Length: 214
Image 1 (cartoon, rainbow, N blue to C red):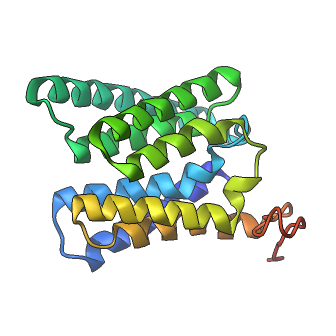
Image 2 (image 1 turned 45 degrees about the horizontal axis):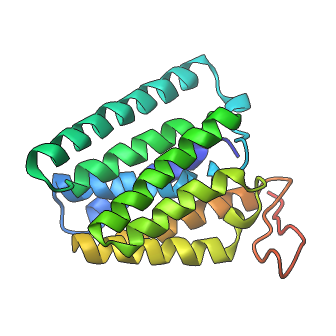
């Protein structure tokens, strides 16, 4: 399944959440960021199979998203040093853009960079005493080195992602964040279930792919 399709589904989930829950621009940005990233995060594993399906326009958009993430990460660092606190909404959007840019790249360098982002999140979670952020950091740092469509494409990963979403929701006190994160992640696995390779939802308990023919 193309990365653009996963992203579009995630963005649609975020947009729907923005309309369903009490609207504010801050919450809408969070719903869109969380849903879009959740819909693509399963493909942080391996060396990414998405880049081969990207055209020139898509690659240009990917680079724009990546550099926007770098820019916002710089803004986040500046605000942290100026106010001595983490501006979480800006940070969530920055990390989302950064990882969305990385998710469609490939190779060892890409994996190292993604893991470095994960270690940064792990440190930020430890410094801020936020367990969900430490969990997210561990996930991001670890999964690039896993086999593609392995553990990240299982029901266990959905449960872990839901726990991270629950922690983020409790921290932000924004309703629906956990539901949006789960819906985004599950949308990725469901979409891949309709591909010829299918998804090993219950791996390693059940080592066969589950797939539906369209």
